[in-house]
Image (tube, rainbow, N blue to C red; front, top):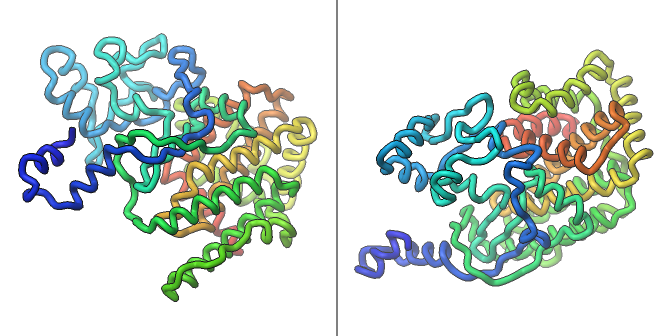
Length: 401
């Protein structure tokens, strides 16, 4: 039980009512929107083809750090010797790109010797993604995990939330308290994701329609909130997706700029060799091409992927839908519909590129191979805010031209 709550019960005058409400929000029953197959996830542990204990810097939560600091004897000494601080954040020291407590069998030494209670929160929770919006909570699975990605591929037609009411013991995120707007976002996201999966438009035309819709939403909320009047009739995505003006084709030079703005790095060779090889495939074929030739080759590459793999289009649409299911409520804080949808298109474009490159080289695209491509691209692109922001700046320059 939180310390603040104990203080409140002992002497209510010493704690503000808002703090008590914060406790209730942190530890209460509420509606939980859970991804349809969320409960099916089971970690494969030592059998994982792309362990989450390698290639990432593992940041520790304050409660775990405090626990390590107060442990006595050899276990405490060993744990503390593997910690480092950077910009106020405590993390494990990497060893050849891996967590220092990763065994040769790809298992966690901390879990094996001390139990799950001594693992950092992120290690216990990942790949589960849990967000408390105050009015409700949502729970999904990060596609950076191979097993979560396998479930995704096996449920392309079941990307929806099911609702239950149960206890939520994780804190509310964000500062916005406009519950009417939050409810509106639920409806917008549902209509948008349904349209993406059901639309017969080719992906480039779909992208144009989505950005047009994003602009309309952006303007709609700016107009209504500046005028201090409640929105009465939201834009319909069907209007923007019925007849887009022209296809949105991200050109070769923009793609190259995105990849070289942080996504690709020489150290990928050690941290993520598979992704490093994918990037090298691209550079070897496109590095010296003039824009016109690069665009033609990019189109040829993607056409070859889709002509030989009819399910590729479905996977890419579902990947974009999943991005929006996971990230669309960022607009609850910043109201930036255009940015949010643009970034989803950007990640989908890059995934299509890497699927196409891999298929051209290997003439193979099995479920396991698709999983590997999705997980490495998602880890690099979506789980590093600095890299994602740098790539978006390159895309934004193209979109604004």
